[in-house]
Amino acid sequence: MGVAKLTRQNTLVPESKYARVERERRYILQDLPEGLSRADHHFQITDNYLTGTRLRLRKVRDPKTNKWVVKFTQKFALNPTDLSRTMITNIYLNAIEAETLAIFEANEIRKNRYRFEFQDREFSVDMFLGDLFGLVLAEVSFETDEELDNFPPPPFAVADVTNNEIFTGGRLSELNFEEIRAEIEKSGLLGRFASKSDANEIIRETGEHHE
Image 1: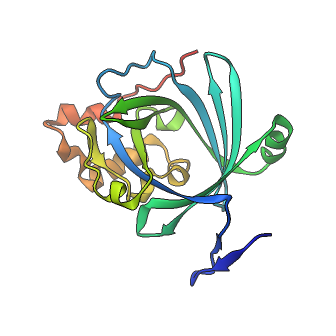
Image 2 (image 1 turned 180 degrees about the horizontal axis):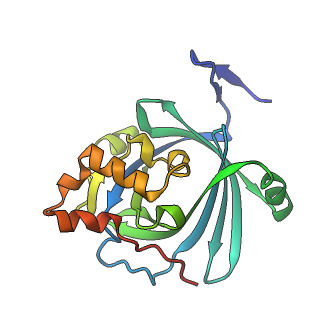
């Protein structure tokens, strides 16, 4: 089973070469950053979050090649008050293994993911589909805590939502956009825009699949 330890919350924490710490910041955007269009190359992602667990089945399709990658992931925060640092373990699956896991009850998210370079950093920009139509988030990863802690928000971001639990994949999979809209209003994010009409841009329906 490998070496493991129990935290005070009785959470099993792996201590092996298979698990690693992922350092990320997450931002909510008004739209795709300038210089990036919906017609640009992207990956089509379907995430299924298994009910009652920290497990995710991710299917990634490249529409250019029609090639698929399937990953089974466990991801959780090391500290519930700091969502910028998570422990992540990935297993790559074949089609039969993916089909076997598909029988479990899960909440689904669909999104198009774009790669965007800005100031020598690669951002993953996600345009959500389905019940989350219109939501646009960007993530950027770091190798060290120092880089993570000192990184300023990029100019194309509306707000840093890294530590807002509602914008994590597991929570988003349980929500629709009306509930996200309510959270945006409650958290005061709408005030970051110059006007009410500008604020409404964050909730417009822009997500589409492009083959």
